[in-house]
Length: 332
Image 1: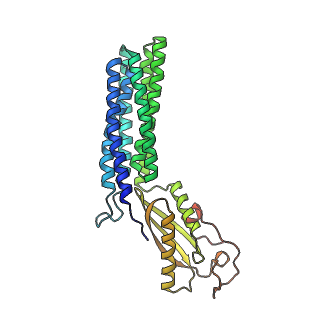
Image 2 (image 1 turned 90 degrees about the horizontal axis):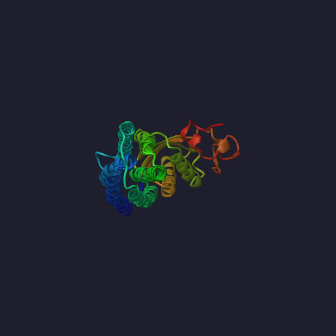
Image 3 (image 1 turned 30 degrees about the vertical axis):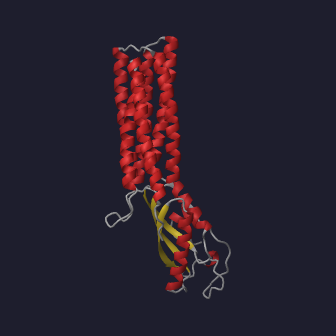
């Protein structure tokens, strides 16, 4: 059973990608202006991160458009995995920018640099932080609502950029108050190491998505949908696996049904169950069940009334959990 991607959702994702790109270019221009006025290494480090924002948002803009294409003969699971590539690419860019920031900051620390017009730079950077915060919240909310990993990664990066700018602002404030020139480079180094860690986290998560690493939150959502829509003939589900292609998920699992059911009866019950589960599942997708006969081994957890082959009375239904769904047959 399969659900289809919605055109309205694709428009929303493309709109968010365009907003991200244009806003990133504008905010980058603000930070370049701040560096021009201040000659601050810390401000330069923040501007270098914004360079990553611009490049990453441009990549996300392209990827989101391609990822929204429906499945075809050459791509039976759709194009959604490109979103994971976009997020991994962004994480790599962040990590590279962090190394450049640390290098420039160490050079400035030992060679010396003179910051100037710090008050003007403080004001510009403060406005940039406010704009970035608004953009980051918008991208994270849109990415979560539309199930877009590229927008989620961009939102997470922009939010981390806000904290970077806040740190730079704190450093500029201390520099203005104390006059200690070394603070400028020291703060930039701290910013660089923080960015390296953020870039690693984004790349690590996206790499896991590319190889379909188990996602506990996805499995919990699926377990909830399966449990809510459970029917008497759905005796047990095991060996469940999920292939994620962006917001489109393909689910494989073994479904245990009464062995005395004929093919037509088993097919109809399975079809109806799949339809209900996909409807309540927070992602678009499809479910492919491999039907297993009960072999009279599940009688104590089977709710089918009037079963002609029952060997023992029904005692209780075992709830669907992540462990029971992904594990071996649940027979006690």
